[in-house]
Length: 114
Length: 112
Image 1 (cartoon, rainbow over the protein chains, first blue to last red):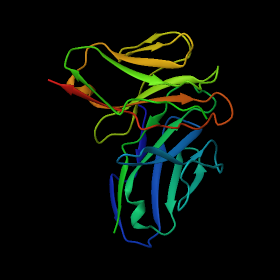
Image 2: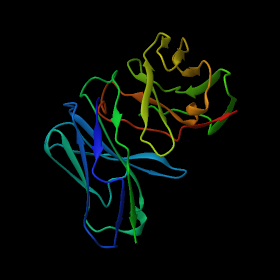
Image 3: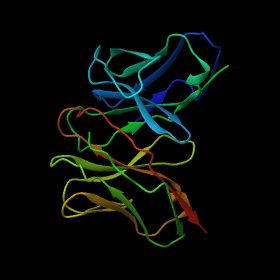
Protein backbone atom coordinates (compact mmCIF):
# COMPACT_ATOMS: atom_id res chain seq x y z
CA UNK A 1 0.00 0.00 0.00
CA UNK A 2 1.53 3.28 -1.10
CA UNK A 3 2.05 5.85 1.59
CA UNK A 4 2.71 9.51 2.17
CA UNK A 5 3.12 10.03 5.87
CA UNK A 6 3.06 13.35 7.67
CA UNK A 7 4.68 13.36 11.07
CA UNK A 8 1.84 14.97 13.01
CA UNK A 9 -1.91 15.15 12.53
CA UNK A 10 -2.33 18.10 14.90
CA UNK A 11 0.23 20.63 16.09
CA UNK A 12 0.01 23.70 18.33
CA UNK A 13 2.91 26.15 18.33
CA UNK A 14 3.56 29.59 19.74
CA UNK A 15 4.15 32.73 17.71
CA UNK A 16 7.82 33.12 16.87
CA UNK A 17 8.69 29.43 17.22
CA UNK A 18 10.54 27.59 14.50
CA UNK A 19 8.30 24.82 13.21
CA UNK A 20 9.22 21.72 11.23
CA UNK A 21 6.60 19.74 9.33
CA UNK A 22 7.91 16.42 8.09
CA UNK A 23 6.72 14.32 5.16
CA UNK A 24 7.96 10.88 4.12
CA UNK A 25 6.97 8.83 1.07
CA UNK A 26 7.81 5.21 0.33
CA UNK A 27 7.15 5.15 -3.43
CA UNK A 28 10.55 6.35 -4.68
CA UNK A 29 8.87 9.45 -6.12
CA UNK A 30 11.07 12.27 -7.39
CA UNK A 31 8.48 15.03 -6.94
CA UNK A 32 7.28 16.18 -3.55
CA UNK A 33 4.95 19.06 -2.77
CA UNK A 34 3.77 21.14 0.18
CA UNK A 35 0.36 22.84 0.18
CA UNK A 36 -1.72 24.75 2.66
CA UNK A 37 -5.49 24.61 2.66
CA UNK A 38 -7.73 27.31 4.07
CA UNK A 39 -11.51 27.64 3.95
CA UNK A 40 -12.63 29.39 0.78
CA UNK A 41 -9.11 29.42 -0.70
CA UNK A 42 -8.66 25.78 -1.67
CA UNK A 43 -5.23 24.17 -1.91
CA UNK A 44 -2.36 26.55 -2.52
CA UNK A 45 1.10 25.35 -3.46
CA UNK A 46 3.88 26.54 -1.16
CA UNK A 47 6.97 24.74 -2.46
CA UNK A 48 7.84 21.68 -4.46
CA UNK A 49 10.94 19.64 -5.08
CA UNK A 50 11.86 17.40 -8.02
CA UNK A 51 15.14 16.01 -6.67
CA UNK A 52 17.28 15.85 -3.58
CA UNK A 53 18.47 19.34 -2.59
CA UNK A 54 16.35 20.90 -5.36
CA UNK A 55 13.38 23.12 -4.62
CA UNK A 56 11.12 25.53 -6.44
CA UNK A 57 8.72 28.13 -5.13
CA UNK A 58 5.04 27.62 -5.55
CA UNK A 59 2.36 30.29 -5.36
CA UNK A 60 2.76 31.32 -1.70
CA UNK A 61 6.35 30.67 -0.51
CA UNK A 62 6.66 33.74 1.73
CA UNK A 63 7.33 32.84 5.35
CA UNK A 64 8.28 29.25 4.50
CA UNK A 65 11.37 27.31 3.53
CA UNK A 66 11.91 23.65 2.67
CA UNK A 67 14.57 21.00 2.92
CA UNK A 68 15.07 17.84 0.86
CA UNK A 69 18.19 16.02 2.04
CA UNK A 70 16.92 12.54 1.14
CA UNK A 71 14.69 11.47 -1.69
CA UNK A 72 11.96 10.13 0.57
CA UNK A 73 11.74 13.08 2.95
CA UNK A 74 10.55 16.65 2.37
CA UNK A 75 10.40 19.10 5.25
CA UNK A 76 8.49 22.37 5.47
CA UNK A 77 9.99 24.94 7.81
CA UNK A 78 8.30 27.95 9.35
CA UNK A 79 11.26 30.03 10.49
CA UNK A 80 9.20 32.18 12.85
CA UNK A 81 5.61 31.01 13.09
CA UNK A 82 2.86 33.59 12.92
CA UNK A 83 -0.87 33.33 13.58
CA UNK A 84 -1.65 33.76 9.87
CA UNK A 85 0.15 30.48 9.25
CA UNK A 86 -2.54 28.62 11.16
CA UNK A 87 -3.80 26.22 8.51
CA UNK A 88 -4.06 22.65 7.24
CA UNK A 89 -0.80 21.59 5.59
CA UNK A 90 -0.77 18.80 3.02
CA UNK A 91 2.18 16.97 1.53
CA UNK A 92 2.07 15.08 -1.79
CA UNK A 93 4.41 13.12 -4.02
CA UNK A 94 4.49 11.89 -7.62
CA UNK A 95 6.84 10.57 -10.26
CA UNK A 96 8.89 13.11 -12.19
CA UNK A 97 8.11 13.69 -15.83
CA UNK A 98 5.10 11.41 -15.85
CA UNK A 99 2.35 13.98 -15.98
CA UNK A 100 -0.15 11.27 -16.77
CA UNK A 101 0.25 9.57 -13.43
CA UNK A 102 -1.36 10.35 -10.13
CA UNK A 103 -0.07 12.18 -7.10
CA UNK A 104 -0.49 10.79 -3.60
CA UNK A 105 -1.35 12.92 -0.60
CA UNK A 106 -0.76 12.60 3.10
CA UNK A 107 -3.53 12.99 5.66
CA UNK A 108 -2.55 16.53 6.51
CA UNK A 109 -1.22 18.39 9.54
CA UNK A 110 -3.52 20.89 11.19
CA UNK A 111 -1.23 23.57 12.59
CA UNK A 112 -2.46 26.14 15.07
CA UNK A 113 -0.20 29.05 15.95
CA UNK A 114 -1.19 30.83 19.15
CA UNK B 1 -0.55 28.38 -16.94
CA UNK B 2 -3.89 27.03 -18.11
CA UNK B 3 -6.70 27.43 -15.56
CA UNK B 4 -9.84 25.47 -14.86
CA UNK B 5 -13.31 26.71 -13.90
CA UNK B 6 -15.75 24.63 -11.90
CA UNK B 7 -19.07 25.39 -10.19
CA UNK B 8 -18.66 26.02 -6.48
CA UNK B 9 -21.22 23.44 -5.45
CA UNK B 10 -23.61 20.80 -6.78
CA UNK B 11 -26.22 18.51 -5.28
CA UNK B 12 -27.25 15.04 -6.26
CA UNK B 13 -29.64 12.41 -5.00
CA UNK B 14 -28.26 9.12 -3.83
CA UNK B 15 -28.06 6.39 -6.50
CA UNK B 16 -28.51 8.89 -9.33
CA UNK B 17 -25.79 9.84 -11.83
CA UNK B 18 -23.79 13.00 -11.26
CA UNK B 19 -22.14 15.07 -13.97
CA UNK B 20 -19.46 17.43 -12.68
CA UNK B 21 -18.37 19.97 -15.32
CA UNK B 22 -15.02 21.65 -15.79
CA UNK B 23 -14.00 24.34 -18.28
CA UNK B 24 -10.40 24.68 -19.42
CA UNK B 25 -10.59 26.85 -22.50
CA UNK B 26 -6.84 27.68 -22.52
CA UNK B 27 -5.68 24.08 -22.35
CA UNK B 28 -2.55 23.25 -24.31
CA UNK B 29 -2.37 20.37 -26.75
CA UNK B 30 -0.41 18.06 -24.49
CA UNK B 31 -1.94 18.92 -21.11
CA UNK B 32 -3.56 16.03 -19.28
CA UNK B 33 -6.88 16.55 -17.49
CA UNK B 34 -6.88 15.11 -13.99
CA UNK B 35 -9.60 14.81 -11.40
CA UNK B 36 -9.04 14.48 -7.69
CA UNK B 37 -11.47 14.47 -4.80
CA UNK B 38 -11.11 15.33 -1.16
CA UNK B 39 -13.27 13.60 1.39
CA UNK B 40 -13.87 15.37 4.71
CA UNK B 41 -10.79 15.44 6.96
CA UNK B 42 -8.60 13.69 4.38
CA UNK B 43 -6.01 14.61 1.80
CA UNK B 44 -7.05 14.65 -1.87
CA UNK B 45 -7.13 11.35 -3.74
CA UNK B 46 -6.79 10.65 -7.44
CA UNK B 47 -9.97 9.80 -9.35
CA UNK B 48 -9.21 9.67 -13.06
CA UNK B 49 -7.28 11.38 -15.85
CA UNK B 50 -7.38 11.65 -19.63
CA UNK B 51 -5.82 13.36 -22.62
CA UNK B 52 -8.24 13.23 -25.54
CA UNK B 53 -10.42 10.14 -25.38
CA UNK B 54 -13.10 9.38 -22.84
CA UNK B 55 -11.88 7.23 -19.95
CA UNK B 56 -13.52 4.82 -17.53
CA UNK B 57 -12.28 3.29 -14.31
CA UNK B 58 -13.87 1.69 -11.28
CA UNK B 59 -14.51 5.05 -9.65
CA UNK B 60 -15.83 7.20 -12.47
CA UNK B 61 -15.90 8.12 -16.14
CA UNK B 62 -14.30 11.13 -17.77
CA UNK B 63 -15.87 12.65 -20.85
CA UNK B 64 -13.64 15.08 -22.76
CA UNK B 65 -15.04 17.47 -25.32
CA UNK B 66 -13.75 17.13 -28.85
CA UNK B 67 -12.05 20.55 -28.69
CA UNK B 68 -10.73 19.66 -25.17
CA UNK B 69 -11.93 22.96 -23.78
CA UNK B 70 -14.17 21.25 -21.28
CA UNK B 71 -14.60 17.91 -19.56
CA UNK B 72 -17.13 16.19 -17.34
CA UNK B 73 -16.56 13.78 -14.49
CA UNK B 74 -19.38 11.27 -14.30
CA UNK B 75 -20.26 9.32 -11.19
CA UNK B 76 -22.70 6.70 -12.42
CA UNK B 77 -24.51 6.11 -9.13
CA UNK B 78 -23.75 8.59 -6.40
CA UNK B 79 -23.47 7.27 -2.87
CA UNK B 80 -23.25 9.19 0.39
CA UNK B 81 -19.54 8.35 0.47
CA UNK B 82 -19.07 10.34 -2.74
CA UNK B 83 -19.79 13.60 -0.92
CA UNK B 84 -16.52 15.49 -1.32
CA UNK B 85 -14.80 18.42 -3.01
CA UNK B 86 -13.95 17.48 -6.60
CA UNK B 87 -10.99 19.17 -8.27
CA UNK B 88 -10.35 19.35 -12.00
CA UNK B 89 -6.71 20.18 -12.74
CA UNK B 90 -4.36 20.27 -15.68
CA UNK B 91 -1.02 18.52 -15.52
CA UNK B 92 1.20 20.72 -17.62
CA UNK B 93 3.28 18.74 -20.07
CA UNK B 94 5.82 21.49 -20.65
CA UNK B 95 7.40 24.19 -18.59
CA UNK B 96 6.07 23.80 -15.04
CA UNK B 97 5.47 20.13 -15.62
CA UNK B 98 6.38 19.28 -12.07
CA UNK B 99 3.74 21.49 -10.51
CA UNK B 100 0.37 20.24 -9.41
CA UNK B 101 -1.92 23.26 -9.10
CA UNK B 102 -5.45 23.07 -7.70
CA UNK B 103 -8.38 25.45 -8.11
CA UNK B 104 -11.21 25.76 -5.60
CA UNK B 105 -13.14 22.71 -6.78
CA UNK B 106 -16.80 21.71 -6.63
CA UNK B 107 -18.39 20.72 -3.33
CA UNK B 108 -20.67 17.76 -4.08
CA UNK B 109 -23.50 17.12 -1.67
CA UNK B 110 -25.29 13.78 -1.96
CA UNK B 111 -28.82 13.70 -0.57
CA UNK B 112 -30.24 10.46 0.82
